[in-house]
Amino acid sequence: MSSNALDEDACWALVAGARHGVLATAHAVRGTDAVPVVFGLLAGPRLVVPVDAVKPKRRMRLQRVINIERDPRCVLLVDHYEEDWDRLWWVRIHATARESAVTGDALDALRSRYPRYGAPGAVVTTLVLDPTAVTGWAATGP
Amino acid sequence: MSSNALDEDACWALVAGARHGVLATAHAVRGTDAVPVVFGLLAGPRLVVPVDAVKPKRRMRLQRVINIERDPRCVLLVDHYEEDWDRLWWVRIHATARESAVTGDALDALRSRYPRYGAPGAVVTTLVLDPTAVTGWAATGP
Image (cartoon, rainbow over all chains, first blue to last red; front, side, top):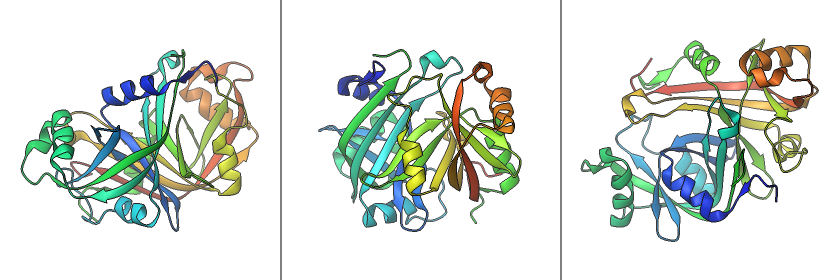
């Protein structure tokens, strides 16, 4: 462990305070895919990524869902950039994901963070991420 | 094409103005990896991602370099988040990557964007990304 590594509690605190991340999945032809996502926190902790009807998509059967079905391994990266590189940090959550119908818990977790998901029908389906490894880094250490 | 799709020129203009991105690579065991990166633009256009001695790392032989050697397919995602979702956008560059010694062009491209790379020895090696597909999306369209 380098002195810049964050422990798991510090990682989850940063993730809870972050507003968005990037979800990378395995893609049969392209090797890997990456999409920006918002997310909520569930007990566990697990993460819920909405497939929504708010941000316009090319199609409702999203590539990320197709990828996950074929290979559930994924990574959620939450990172903080600013011009002062002494303030950089990131948290990386390796996880297995599965598509899940929208549960009450998931909807609560998403609505509490993103008011636009309060609209009826805003969340169409979800990906639930079960973390397998959580690592983090901060330029100035924990 | 949805009306939210950006053409390639619009994508490159956004990438040129962005300060950082997320690089996803294929990983033999984990399926996929993702790391935050900064980057410079080379003729082509191609992209150069530095492996630097500025931001402290756990080891100099970075996992991203190992992954690329095994499978050169990667994705650079540059995304813009803000609370007003009408202002969201992202650009995704699928590419093949290779490790490359630091060339003068690469160093110029990086130093012009990130003054800290002006220090001697700051850039140790680079990944050069050759784009195979560039796509982009903006909430309000082009």
